Image (tube, rainbow, N blue to C red; front, side, top):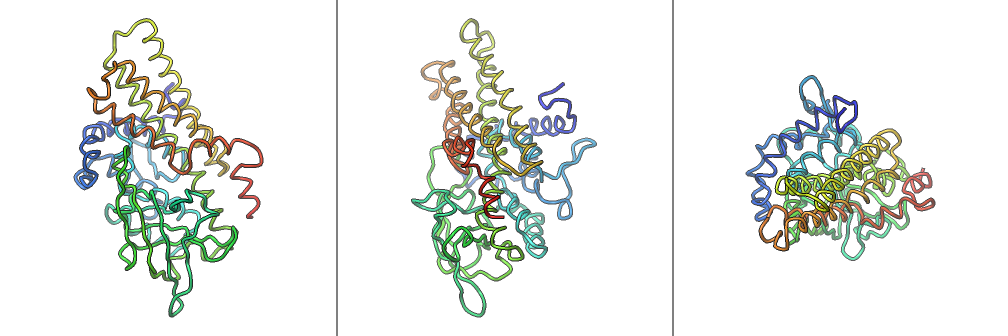
Length: 387
């Protein structure tokens, strides 16, 4: 029996990712110091894997580990891979090229032409993508966005607005932008922006942690959008826009939980290696953290399996809330166990502390995940309302 239960297939994926994580760990501080160095890490096996993980097999060959194959299109596969790579460095995971959130949105909304263009480009060479929902002063409330998509010339459209804290937007070739075409919940539409288009500007923001993620401020000034770039154009308004956001967040939430869990496990590994002879209360504290990490891993895997089976995010919200809290607690406990000057003397641990805080803010803060656990406020109820 392994950390993945009796599932030999998931165990093989996890073990392979753990081997690759050593390269992430070795480059973590360099990437944190200068995120523009990311090009120097593109040949790492784990980064190469992430660059195509999540692309459907008709566009790119699946990952092969022994006799097993993985396309990365399920939440459970993404969670297992992500946790083990984040155990090396979460910043490197987020800095890697690949389909990321835009890939999940494409699976929900893309028609044949859109999928061919998007997946064909990303599969051909390492390509960054991005998902732009959050706006200045409005956060990630899809119902409050003001970025506008309006008619332009010759049947085209024009996109105008601002987004903020958008991962990899300063590196991306394609950015999925949520914009408004009219008032109301059915007036939100996703468009696939090619960042070479005139009017698109992205600037990296200074951050305390997760510097490799390339969090950016985006300006959209009359960006021309062709009809093929409107995602879900073949679907009813009720099946795109806010509903698609709910689906993306549901399916990616176990991955965010896995990222936080990877940070917790890395901090635990760090202190175990440096306090092998710990006794008494310190040993009990270290062992308790290890037990809780294992229990949270089981919850994350359950949440991912539930999302794959139902598309709903209730268990995933609980998993993310617990994993993010555990990441913060474990990194701070590691500092306490290594002495008052731990962060000054252990830059790797200092980075884990800074990165742990960032996981909470991905696709909504921990408070939002707590709200998702109460009847009447669940995302899947919004889905029912919009169907």
